[in-house]
Image (cartoon, rainbow, N blue to C red):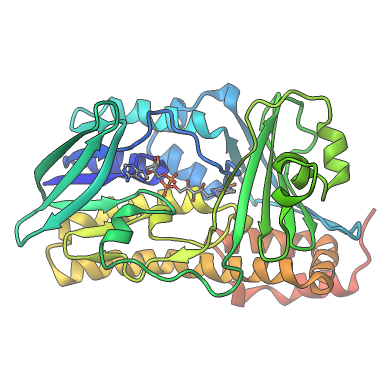
Length: 395
Ligand SMILES: Cc1cc2nc3c(=O)[nH]c(=O)nc-3n(C[C@H](O)[C@H](O)[C@H](O)COP(=O)(O)OP(=O)(O)OC[C@H]3O[C@@H](n4cnc5c(N)ncnc54)[C@H](O)[C@@H]3O)c2cc1C
């Protein structure tokens, strides 16, 4: 079986590696050149780290460009603070270029993967037997027709062309459709073993310890409410930091390792994830928001589901298994992200939530594992809530 994958981000590269290891022929196309950068908070949840370990891929990641983190700390604009730790393991912040390089190096070792960089996907056509593609080589602008693929996987990110030219295209969410993200890397020593989330009304800053000498400041905001790039006399970076004077002070005078870059609007969900010989995974399939720091882990989980089920996609049951497994993953993600998004727009309830989490770290940990699909949002142990409400916080 020959599989074409459009997009060599985390979803596409891991899919290619896992498919190749199962004996499939894979051809992967990316318009960029590996290692490929992207606006991203770079925090890999423990579930994503586990998958890298499971497939022996952690060894490909440059240790100097990654750092473990133990959990999440919320810092609200009214001074309330809460920290929750992952239970039994750590997450890992991995510089995006290092993640891309590591997965690319691993993919190169698989003899049945053909990697095409600087090759833009243009279109496809499908018949009863296979899928044919048109791609354009970026350097010489040649349009090339390629035929004979059994399946086409769209792993081409948020603004997926595979999705938009197929009838898999969906709608953007009506709630907070204009969420944006931006990031900058600063050469400085991290000051927390957690990823910090600083909340202001309509905007958050995620502070990720990227390595021992690099901190990533990553912003998420609601473009309907806040327009940081339009603040007179300020560029995007100054505009974003102006909402977080404490962080602006901290980062002042340190060298920028990357330029501030923004990306969005973020939320969307494809109408269908699979039809005929075409399927979508990763951000191409769905993305709600960065607020739960889950996108890469989700992309990995979907890659694993794809590699496990594709051999049976010629049957209705096989395709349904794929869709069912992806749906399960998507559901928990949408639930927890919707909850977090609710708090971005309701400052009083957010303050109450952070107060509660601050008094009950167990509740916070439970939510972190709910976010990874390991615990249920509907099965929060009552004792954690009671502890938050009634037990005095230990100092
Ligand atoms: C601001 C922000 C912060 C985030 N923070 C986190 C975080 O902390 N943790 C986390 O896990 N996730 C985070 N995410 C989400 C994460 O970045 C994505 O979920 C993840 O990158 C999805 O991987 P992907 O492979 O599906 O898509 P992408 O990484 O977007 O890769 C898609 C690839 O497709 C290629 N491509 C696109 N179109 C074409 C074409 N026509 N032809 C050929 N190639 C094409 C692109 O060049 C790209 O390499 C964040 C996202 C944003 C926007």
